[in-house]
Every structure is written in C-alpha cells, then in structure tokens.
Length: 358
Length: 206
Ligand SMILES: [Zn+2]
Image 1 (cartoon, helix red, strand yellow):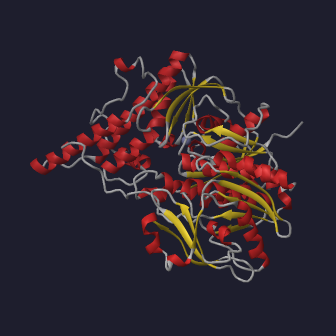
Image 2 (tube, chains in turn green, blue):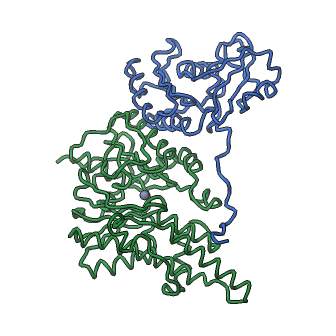
Image 3 (tube, chains in turn yellow, cyan):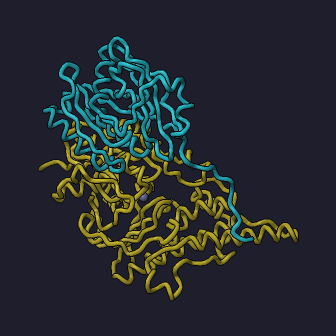
C-alpha cells in the first residue's frame, strides 16, 4: 500500500503565519507565528503590518514545523497554500513562497480555499489517535475576525456551497470593537469572554442582526454585526452620560459584555441550527477563532442537542487559522486524484467557497 | 550559478553564471501580477538555462526599493527557493543592478507610487566594475529630486521602469567572486506601514 502523501501547508491569509505538515489525515506539525501583538496598538489587524510580519516569519516557521514533524524537505510530496479569501498583500507572500518552494523541490502545488480549509481541519487526528471520517453532508459555521460564513459541505473536494455570510463586520471584529468601547485590550474575544463570566446576559437586550421576519427572505443565512456594535456603543454612551449627570452607577462592564456576547452567540447558533433543520443535515461543524468563545460553544451544544444535530468542534489550535488545515485539504485533493494547481494561480482576496482548489 | 529574482517594479527572473553570463531572463512588466507570474517565470528560466534547482549555488533577491506588496512577493519567493535547495539568499539593493560597470556618475530613479520616486546615486564603478553607491536609496517627490540629491547636475540620470534580474544576478556573482559584502537582509520599504494608532473609540451619539 502506498503511504499517504506528506504535505506541507502554508497559510498567510490574515495575521497568523501558519505552517502545517500532515501525512494524509495525520497531523505531524502545526506551527504558528502571530503578528497579533503588533496589531494590538491599532485595535485591529493592519494589513500592511500583517504582510510584513509574514515575510519575516516564513522561514523560521518553516524550520520549526519541519523539526516538529521530524521530516526533511526531500520527503515532502506536495505543497499546499491558501490562495484566498483573505488580505490580498498577506496572501501574496504565501503564494509567492509556496510556488518557489514547490519548484525548488520539484513537487506539485495545491492552491486551496481558506474557508474550506477550516472544514478540512476536522479530518486531522494526532499520530496516536484513530482516524475518523468527516461525516458529510455537514453545515459548517466559520467565525473569526476575518470571516463569518455558513457553508453547506456535501463533498469537501468538490461540492461546497455558501449559504450565507456577514454583510458587514465579521463577528470577531465586533468583539474587538466592543472590547475597545469598554476599554478592554485587543484582541477582544478573550477579554469579552472573561468580563462576561460575572455578568448577566439578560441585563440588556441588544439587537439580533438579520433575524426579523422581513430578513428571512433575502438574508436568512446571512449575518450582520454592525448594528449590534452601534447599539452597544449607544447604550454605553447613554449610561456614561447618566452616570456623569445624575451620579448614577458606572457602566457594568460584565453585564454589557455578557449581553453583547449573548446576542452574538444567539444569532450565530440560531442561524446555523436553523440551516441544519431546514436542509435536513443533522451535522454542524464549527471553525474559526471565535470558537474559542465559551458561550458560543455552549449555546451551540445546547441547541444542537435539542435539534438532534451532531456538533463537531476541532481542537482550538486547528480552529484558529493554521497551515495544518491547508495541508489536510491539499492531501485530500491529492488523494482524490485532483491535478495540481497551475503555477500561474494567483492570490484571490475574494475567492468564493465554491472554488475549493484554485 | 545563481537564480535571481526582482519584483521591485515588474517581475524579473534570471539564471546567471559567473563565467557564462546571463543564461536566461524572463520578465513581466505588469506591476500588479507578481504573485501570479512568479512561478511560471522561475520555471521558464530554469528550463531555458537547462538548470535544475540543485545545481544553483544561491538565490539573489532584489530587496528594493519598490512598492511593498509586489516587492515582498519576490523576496518571499527568493527566500523560499533558497530554503528549498538549502542554499543562501543573496540580498542586494535593486538599484545597484543598473550601476554595474557604470562609466560615469549615475542617478538611478524608479517609481515609488504615491507621487514619489526612489533614487540612488553612484560614482563611476570601481576597478572591478562594481557599483559605488554614494547616496540613497531614498524617497523624494519628483519636484524635490534636484534638491534632495547632492550635486544633482553631475549625474547621468537613469529613469528605470524595471530592474532586470540578469544584471542583478551578475552583480551577485561578481560581488561573491570579489569577496565583497551583499546588500540589506531586510526589505527596503523606505516607508512605514500606513496606519494611525488607535485613539480610543469615537462617540456614535451626539
Ligand atoms: Zn480563517
């Protein structure tokens, strides 16, 4: 029997330089260098800062990943790379490097879709863990600072459909912005999560974007967090003004954080579960950095259980942006006999999910 | 033999040999398609030169100056290729390629976008024909260039739309042969990233 392909994946779509190495579905290395600290003072990812950081992190991250996997470059069967969607300048660093590396080693290149990569993360298992098939079809909810997308995956390599996505801010961005509003540092997700722990999620009823009956037609599976962010800002400003004028008590950061988080978790999970029910797909997969949010996970589990939906959440290190998921998708494409990508493939910041391989 | 890559303007890739000169060079003038064309151009020059990656002894990278996004593609590719074959990167100032064997003082000027140019000034090449940079690389607005460059009138001005990788590669070969130092290890962006540090949230209500 031929051994599964050994694939190195390169991910540079946002602020994480991810290099992953897999053998088929076995995870051998998942190395990530993040430029998050450099973005902290700006309150969000600055594309040019991210792109510069990718260029500097590339080689050390490659070296660490190879050492961690215990493999040499000569052993690799293919290079996989994220060609989109993501930040254009950041993607180009990865694409340029991946092409050169593939040519230098004389091996094929697989340029793949970042979002479908998040789904591919669920294929992976540790060297000592049993294999598990990705059960299909599945609905996938992918939520991070860069994207908020709901997908229907019938076949990982050939049939992925975009059900809906955010029409303004990504959910992760909303966490960052609300954290800033509350005087909490970047990135906002973990900060809001921590502050919310002692707050009352029912203290303030913040709006649920695109859930009104009139939105059910056009935006049934879409998300919107811009209005929520503004609503939180208005509420906080009004409360602070009251505090100043009437000596009322200051804004309860835990209550605002908990109420805001509840709104986000509610909309995300309600729409995902509704899609499962409507499409009669009894499976939901979560991916993206917002999965780190305890309330999002808990509410997803609660609602999945109630709806008879099986919920899958890969380990957090495979949910945030990483190269291993890109390698896993590349290995799957290779195993299914897909031709490598052409060397003229570009970076496409708006690559649609229907294009699994560019 | 060296592979040379420069994306400080368009995309240029070459294979050079110290004794036989430029064996192959391929160029794409478009300044927005670096990531798309880089692989095809590398493959083409290797084929044309009849060279396998492992026969190369290093990879020359044009470190700029040049617009950020494109410049990085070439440097990323050069670094990755060098890593793949286990050979060193040879970083060079891109402008220096045009001052190789210069017989008289030379002012190299390239487009830096945002209504600015990048410039480097050179004395005549030394006894080995190697560039002697005396000013730059720096940025200036086109109108201020005369004031920015010391003794501006004494230079032959060369406005370049591209940096050819062939001469850049030959510069690498000749610097190595002469035991001279190579260029900067970091990209010559010459501009800080475009960002304004956060000043705290703005009010949404009046
Ligand atoms: Zn992502």
